[in-house]
Length: 299
Ligand SMILES: [Zn+2]
Ligand SMILES: [Zn+2]
Image 1 (cartoon, protein in one colour):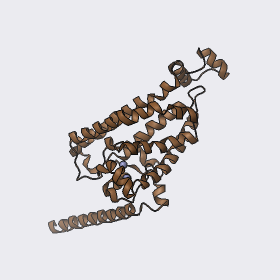
Image 2: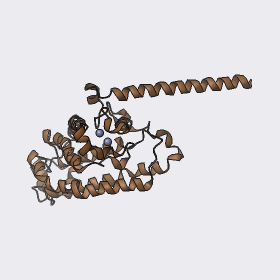
Image 3: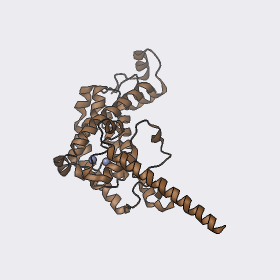
Image 4: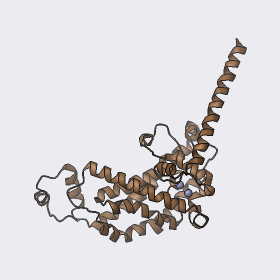
């Protein structure tokens, strides 16, 4: 809730007129409690989990219309009912764990100092804070994920997330309830270190989930804008982690590739990539050799 009754009061307190974005924020948030604004995340997460993976489901259904070549594990085909079951399981987790967690975690947001007032942060401030959040989350998530691959962690908790050896968008938040809670820590840590505005916090939660859905899409599209993000892992990178499964000691990072590189946990992946590239080149050379042989014969 903002401590001003009118826009004029807010402008007087700031010593300048409100920007367009600030006016919209004032009109929207002035009479709403900070707790209610924080709880918007429940609606955002519900929409993100439900809507963002839908185009990927459509692509999976229409795979034969030219999308097959982008599927990372083309031999795997999931039926619509299998994808719906995954979504239902995620929704059960959402209503039993994620939603209630949001409802009770507001005191921690208050404690770290997420603000809702004016002025709004600049675009640069938002971008830099989001960058810090992604780096902190990536680093912390790497070690927690690596820990979850020990015998006890995998058998009792992380195995659920690995039920999908070829992941789909809906499977991004598909995990044991304990993993959902544990992996909330890396997401919270960035904002705790560099607290920002509620709008930045909303953006962070949304972008992190969109990134996770992209990473679990099961498709490697060459035109994806994420290809331009330095050190971004992406779908192909994380797909390998799911493909190898419980034995996987490779590609633990959730967002970037540098942790796996520094700690040497990308060796299996790099080796497999090298072999596949070589095989592809040999196949292509073989094909061109065969076709030139055919040409010679027809001449
Ligand atoms: Zn794993
Ligand atoms: Zn995963």
